[in-house]
Image (cartoon, rainbow, N blue to C red; front, side):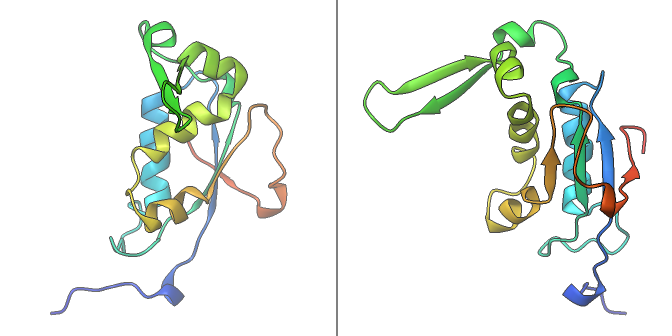
Length: 144
């Protein structure tokens, strides 16, 4: 018996809605990454983009456990000597609440063109409004 390998025509993508209100960052990010990879599908194929679209609302209300909001640092380098910029998780959550979740999910995806393709299917919004009502996303959560 041969191992089944999915073809691009066999993939059916769905839309899922996650509410980040009160969710812990890492647990939510791992669930989203799993959905973006397509590992919830019985026909998961590692070398293909099998994942679904994910819409996340209320990203500004995401939680960090312990003292991570004060001690967790995000780094960015300008490319010039001495151009290292640091930002705490609390500052990032206040200024760009979508980036803190996007960075967490990006770290859990493959580090190649396939991972970048998967990340494009992630839509994050700080508030409770999103423009994807026409796709009628199914409600998903950390328990599913």
